[in-house]
Image 1 (tube, rainbow, N blue to C red):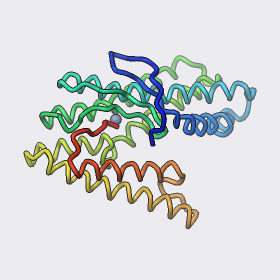
Image 2 (cartoon, protein in one colour):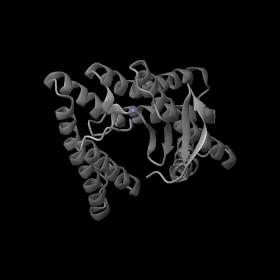
Image 3 (cartoon, rainbow, N blue to C red):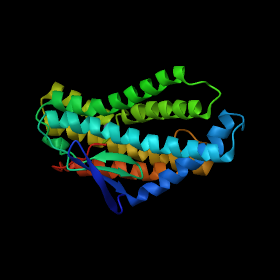
Image 4 (cartoon, rainbow, N blue to C red):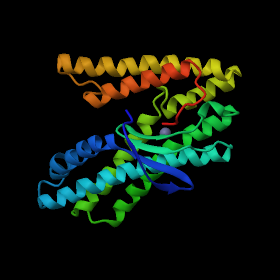
Length: 245
Ligand SMILES: [Zn+2]
């Protein structure tokens, strides 16, 4: 999934890297907004070059939002004494390399996991409020609306209880709190991750075979399912280094 990372700087003293594979979602997302969604939403009233700039602006903002989501995790982790080795933006989103398994208490794990989606929701709300200041006939209105909606999707998707997504970290912290056993609860959420990743792949394959798109329906979701299964297997084996998604 991660091919060749390029360091682009440091934020809060955390190295930020971009993986070369990111060109694939950049192209797909920019193309989706430039050629389909923006012209549809605005009844084709604008020039093609405006749609291109709009699509690029939305795509850049989505990856900036993902970076802020990961920084949310990283800053809470730092408060609990865990440093982030790096944040990598890659083809399936972002990852903050934090030794999550070193978290000392369920409460610290809960707060760290929850804060990423909270940041995404906060961005969605700020963008939504900005809409009241922008005339709705301008293309920028559609762009800000799209950025708001994408951040809601990022928050909701990450809160799915599928390991290693944030929702599963939250679930892990709750089971840890209830059982008092950190690694037993990690095993439970890892098994849920293997099942969830398999369901994503089965759903995607069945949508190819039966031509009925249920939830997911493209090659990216097969990769995502495979990544979820791989990460869950690593955690089941109690790896000491689990990146934060
Ligand atoms: Zn996250």
